[in-house]
Image (cartoon, rainbow over the protein chains, first blue to last red):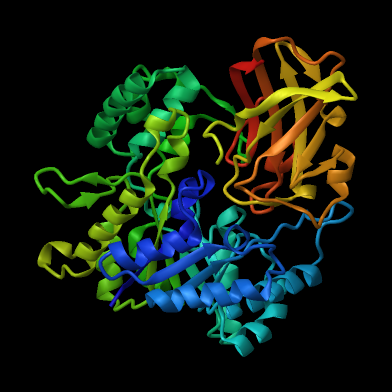
Length: 365
Length: 143
């Protein structure tokens, strides 16, 4: 049975407005999400004085987790290779940092430790014996714009490297952590509206109105016929099609290239990598009520229904942890325009719970 | 509590030293979703009503301590937490006049999981991403 949890990243806005602390967030997860019990954290955001938290923090953390019967699922570690300005961190330094993080994760009771993209596999290899000793499994995130197979010569090369390493070592302590952002089948309305405000200076109302028009065109044409899609969408929102040099490389790109890209991974590829998946990031941006189904919610942009059907079919019994990211594109509209993260996460769990427990025929792909 | 805008209304005022106004300060929050070591900060220029204050003349106060930009670049042990504002202290004899000012601040945080091109901080562009950029707030009031 698929298990449900929440990455506290989802409540980042409530944290910086000092509306919720991690303790409030644990209580929210345990009380209002209909049986969710998993917790994921961003290392230093939750861990005070990272990487050397006081002993009292471990006590507080483990006590709160016990109080609510929660499970520490995944600790998200980073690797700031430019921390020291006189040199880029060496492989040995990276491995040393991974070991520090593993010890923190272990003392906080975490089962998995998510590694940020780009950690050299040689550093993973050096840290692996400690991971095995502490029984904390390291995961490599598979994040948009990656696919679920290796694409040589690109950012998406690493998954091939990861799987080869797992096969070579036979380890049970290194695996994958897909982020559902790779299954982004349609643009998210708040993100499109945000780009319109930024690029064309539209007001809030105008930006959502034009976003609706663009989404209607996308619904009709889809992402595969780019030429037709762009020909129809450009007159509606020319500012999204202004090409600029991309900091990601690869020549000139426009906002539409990102918004209308379609999924970066084929959902069926989940079958190929299922045995390596330890944990999943349930990325989402905008939970809206399903038309004609009061109390039921959906993220129209991400293939949750299909992904969960496949996970069910494969008897995946790990966690999907909510990772709400829609707040970040709605913080330019004043306090009244801010999104309620707590409500968004509750809706996300209503949806996941419904899909996980639905084995009816229409769930088959 | 922080304000939603990167540039904060709170804390925007002139600095008085020994009875003389020697400059002004403006507070910013990080636009990134996680904290950074001070060495990861890429501080940029400040512009007030068109007047430019070069990046390396600005003092950053983080966790109650003053740092020059050179000191921050060397500092791999102190941390700027995502829910704490930084105070930028800018020298200007006589400070800013009473009334409204348009303020622009530019800074970035390096993050090693993005392509290296993301980390090439250019003080003279407006490129803005999830980990930093150029921020402007108009009609900031000094009383």
